[in-house]
Amino acid sequence: MDDRKRRGAREWLFETIFEHETAWGRAFDIALLIVIVVSVLIVMLESVPSIEERHGALLRGTEWVLTIVFTLEYLTRLYCYPRPAVYARSFFGLVDLLAVLPTYVAAVFPGAQALLVVRMIRLLRVFRILKLAHFVRQADDLSEALRASAPKIIVFVITVVILTTISGSLMYLIEGPEHGFDNIPHGVYWAIVTLTTVGYGDISPETPIGQFVSSLIMIMGYGVIAVPTGIVSAELTRRPAIDAVSGRCCGSCGFERHASDAIHCARCGEVLER
Image 1 (cartoon, rainbow, N blue to C red):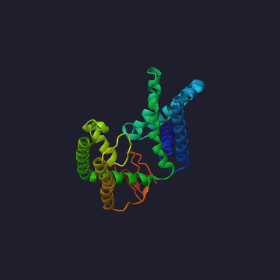
Image 2 (image 1 turned 180 degrees about the vertical axis):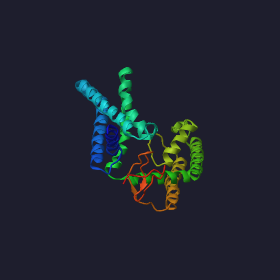
Image 3 (image 1 turned 120 degrees about the vertical axis):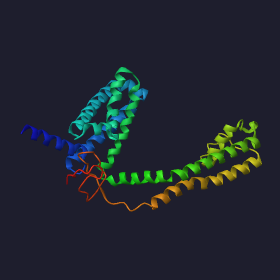
Image 4 (image 1 turned 90 degrees about the vertical axis):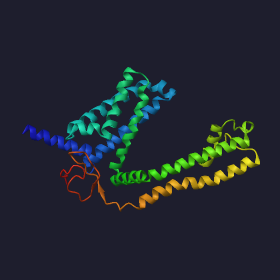
């Protein structure tokens, strides 16, 4: 009986912490999101000298309370997860661990508090609250399109590097040190800024020939910006339509991006809870 109760408690904790389609799961995610935002704001406020001078003790005390909350949450995740080692090595498992370590490290090595901003990564869980799990699938498709486009983009980047090197060297010869182009690397820097249409204005050509060349590079820059977008877009259009995705979490391997009508886990084959 005790074992059944223990298993029931673990299953309830798993559904509450890892699932987001139940009322308790949504409430947990919302509460966790609020705590994360508060903890990051505290870290930011601690970096302001005037605020830290007046309220430093309060901020540090609150940070320790939040760290204890995050520590208990991390341990609870390990407890209720069917395979704790799998979760500990997963992306969010590592992020959850990094969310609690900096405070303890800072107790030994002052100044490490700045590492606490890693908690901002955990705001990715907002997708669960907003039921936007299909956006994660979209991100997978985008990353696959980027991988498929990698050879073309690499060739394009090499072409841009050659172009900026030639342009920077040419402007060094045309303008010279007296107009701010005191070396070729400086000229290449100017070419990159001009070609990407950033235009800091810290260095600019003054001779008519130099201004003519820079005008050509500026016009070329609009085409340069459009090329990578077109390459990735072409790969995306070749991909099949995206099926509906649910946010159910596999209790065996933790995989979450399943089709809405899936019965078994797409990764390990385990039967999914309905």
